[in-house]
Length: 332
Image 1 (cartoon, helix red, strand yellow):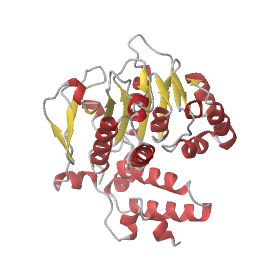
Image 2: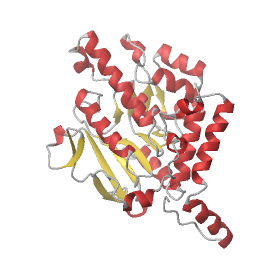
Image 3: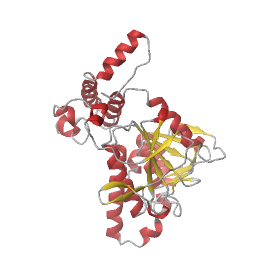
Image 4: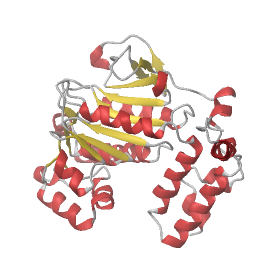
């Protein structure tokens, strides 16, 4: 297989096809679609309105709380460029049911093509729970073939999250079990409250991790540790997860139950000032390069590097360094 064919599922194919470099500012001015969503002023503001998924598009319209299981928040002010995917299936503790997965897939698909979003946070609006995993009540009503088809779609959704071009952060403020941890593993970075509980517990239910967990966990914590965790179905607290490298940051939970979300937002704020195209290409180089031998990885790095050379942001970075001032990146 040629390098071109290996790279084809990823955004680097734009480089190989001779397309011009990604331009966030230019794309926005040219009228690139920017999906509708909620806006917040600062981290303390609550959820406003809702997004309802209908057909193949995102529509902002009134709807009952029970009909919306995944919402989108667009932050503003100093946090402009951060989008939050908020899981809000209250009664089922964000269990991965058909409606939940359908809404998540639609929202993630829209984010993939949104040049205004620089960082995506995945968090929960359900107290004490990030995502409880599979909806076992719903799954019990499926035939074997229906269950297999559903899990195939779930695995595909996790891959769509993993290949989002911008950095993604999961904020684990509660239980992240089975498919819930698989969702977090599909993100680039993870923060956790010390009281959070996480684990791939499928073997305790007669299953194995089927939405990417058996592949992503070994890549994060190492093969031997991942085997132990999956074979035993063990649950980890936030401190243990940090020790194993499963999460990037662990913080003590606060009275409002959103400490991991605050840590994720702090992490996003460290990413926001950096050059958007460079950050996206760095993600591309690392994510794609980790899947191949080092020689091919070097070639991928070289092509991603070539993508940033002609950008205005690179010129701005050099000018800011010479002039001893903070750079002002526009994503062009």
